[in-house]
Image 1 (cartoon, one colour):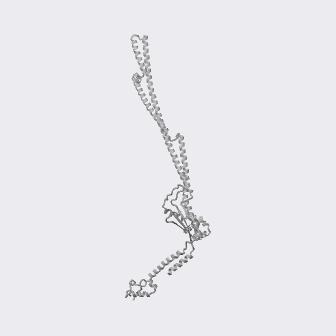
Image 2 (cartoon, rainbow, N blue to C red):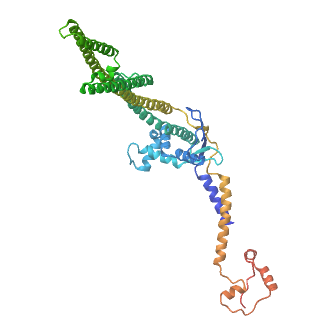
Image 3 (cartoon, rainbow, N blue to C red):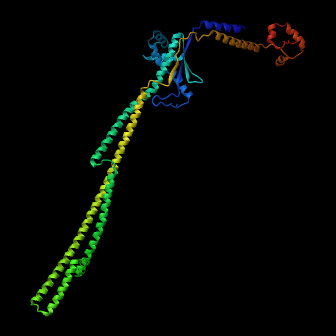
Amino acid sequence: MYIVAAVLALAVAASLLLPKKYRAESAIVVDVRANDPLTQEGAMPSQPASTYLATQVDVIASHNVALKVVDRMKLASDAEFVEKFQNATQGAGGPGAIRDWGADELLKHLTVRPSRDSNVIYVQFTSKDPQTAADITNAFADSYLQTSLELKVNPARRQAGWFDQQVNDLRVALENAQRKLSAYQGDHGVIGTDDTRLDVETARLTEISNHLVAAQAAMYDAETRQRQMNDALAKDRADASVNVLINPLLQNLKAELARSEAKFADVAQRYDRNHPQYMSARAEVESLRSRVAAEVANATGTIAREARVARQNTADLQRAMEQQRKRILDLQHNQDEFSVLKRDVESARAAYDSALQRGSQTRLESRLDQTNIAILNYAFVPIDPASPRLFLNIVLAVILGSMLGAGVSLTRELLDRRIRSRDDLLEGAITVLAELPRARASMRLQRLPRWIRFLDKEPRVEPA
C-alpha cells in the first residue's frame, strides 16, 4: 500500500508540475483513384492503396515538407527560435543550417498516422502553445499539398522542355524530308504516285512489241525472198525466181517475148537477116528481152529494198521497244524513289504530330494546380492539453504501484528463508524429531499476528 501511495503521489506531482502540451490534428483525404483532369479517366494506381498511403505518410514526414513549414511560418527569422538554435548548436553551422535544424525539430513533435479502413491521413503536432500547434499542423498540411503538386508538376515541366526540343528537331526533319520530295519531283517530273501513267506506258510497250513481231515476220519474209532471188541469180535463172513468177508485168512481158520470138523464128525462116521484116522482128525481140531483163533487175532491187527496209524497221522498233522499256523502268524507279521520299515525309509528319500532341499534353500537365489530395479538416486550436493527463496518470500509477508492490512483496518472501513446513526442514538437511498435529498448529496460527497469517499459507513449525 505504501508503494502504491508513493507511485500515485509521484504521478500526481508530475502531472501537476510538468508543463502542459497541446496537440492539434488535421485530416487529409488521399483519393487513390482520382480522375485525370486531362483525359477524364480514372487513373489506375501502379501500387496498392496501402502502399500508396504509406508513401504519402513518408512524404508528409519528410525533411522537404518540414523545410516548407519553416519557411511558411518564418521560423528562421523568429528571435526565440534563433536563440534556441544558437543554444543547441553553439552558433555552429552555415546560413541555411537553421532551416535544417528547425525542420528536424519540427519532425520530432510531428505524428502522422493513416486511417486503418479509409484513405484519410491524420497529421498531429504537439506544442506548448495551442495556437502554435494548430498553426504548424495546418502549415504541414498546406506544405504537403504543395509538395505533392510539385512532385507531379516538376517532372511534367522537365518532360515539357524535353518535348519542346524534340518537336523542334522533328520539325526540322519534316521540313528536310518535304524539301527532298519537292526537289525530286522537280528534277524527275514526278507528279505523284499515279499508276495511270505507268499503265499507259506499259500499253505502249505492248503495242510496240506487237509491231516489232509483225516487222520481224516481214523481215524474215523479205530476207527469204531475197535469198531465193540471189540463188536464182547465181544460177542465171532469175526468171525462175518466185518474185518473178508472181510478178504480172514480168509474166506479160515474158508472154509477149515468147510471141515475138516465135514470130522472129517464122520471119527468120522466110527472110534474110537484112530483110526489113527480119530486122524489125529481131529488134522487137531484143527490146522485149531488154524490158524483161530490166524488169527482173527492178524486181530484184525491189526485193533487196524491201528486205533492207524490213531490217531497218525491225531495228527501229527494237530500239523503240528498248527505249520504252527503259522509260518504264525509269518511271518505276522514279515512282519507287518518290514513294520512299513520300513515306519519309509521312513518317516525319507522324512523328512530329505525335511529339507535338504529347508535348502539348505534357505542357498542360505541367500547368496543373490540383492533385488527388484534399484537406478534410484543418486543425483548430485545442482547448484541453494532450499531456499531462491527470486521470490517466492516476490510473496508470495505481496499476503500476500495485504491480510494483506485488513484486516487492514476492521478492521479500523469496529472500526470507524461515522454516514454515517439514519440506523446508528436509531441504535444509535438518533431522525432524517431531511434528505437532495440525490442530495445535492451527491454534498457534491464531496466536500469530494477523499480517503474518495473511502472508503465510501454512503455520510455522519450529524444531523441538
